[in-house]
Length: 162
Image (cartoon, rainbow, N blue to C red):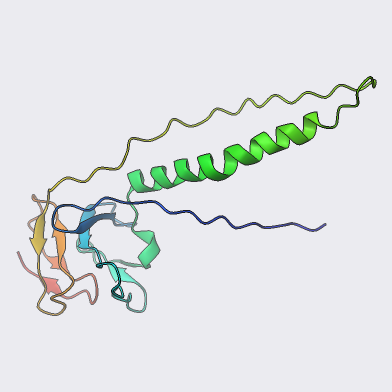
């Protein structure tokens, strides 16, 4: 049996706050923070071995692991609209195309899959407070206003006391 794997590439815009920060979420402690978005045309900071550090819990994760729940839902909705729904429609057409005019067999396809409600468009507010790090001054983060404990540099994990 041969399985064909197809790839589909899409893009999704994620809004920045007015200072150019992108909302992220730690995959471990699930707290949201923001990191400074890399300007277009510049190379982003490379994650150290083991990935970036969470500013709150200091656990490391790879660069692609920091999406918020809302960003993940938005990506799922885009993939449903661009990939799943068209493939289901094509499958239904193929099944119904098996009908033979005047034949004894009449095949009808009924898709009873509920389409997910599209999530609200992503919006970004100007919340959180900025923390700068002497070790990596070009990689500030923003943490929740109520956070009063230490904050870790996302690149090297160095602690800054608040």
